[in-house]
Length: 124
Image (cartoon, rainbow, N blue to C red; front, top):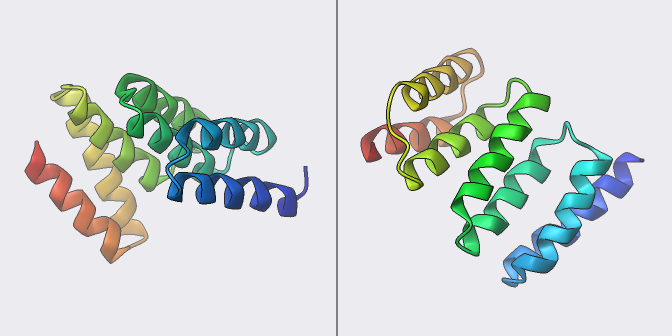
């Protein structure tokens, strides 16, 4: 699939999310993941759809699956840590994930993601 087609999938999915059409967005974003499984945006957005419709475990599992094909991606790691907290999973695995995210951000700093990391650590 072409890069342009993947961008169209993402744009349509994002538009549907903005309009709170989460079920429709999820259909589009699943197609995006099939077309481009290594693009973290599809995993993040699809997870967001499931979170918005109160399917937190599915949202968490999607991010975990995404991390198996998009390695390493600090955004996926940070989002997964957040979903783990939301479903009540606190502990060593989540702490290790946050440490991994921090290491990635030390190698490639991003102030916005660093703020989100600190907020996530405080929310634990």
